[in-house]
Image (cartoon, rainbow, N blue to C red):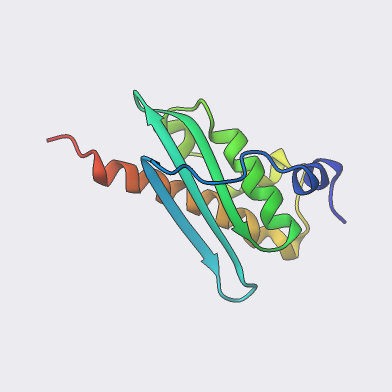
Length: 124
């Protein structure tokens, strides 16, 4: 059973699309279920100013993508990097146990986007 909040993010996802000149891009997938997620971030002064996603997957994966982008927007890179899979699941008022792996994808894709940004902007 999906929560009303999860269904809202599935049927009306936020931040869908891509950022052509993204500062960081993170991709994550689960070969077992076939879900694939790509997150794009735009960073200004170490704060995520814009974030978009493209997801191929089930309703839970789409809802997780929508929620993680909402959670990351306006946060510092450090704050966004600290978002856990449980944080995402809690923000969606829970995920069925068999769909918890979807929340892993969101947190992992966001972290990879941040790592991509950091690798391109290393401080010497």
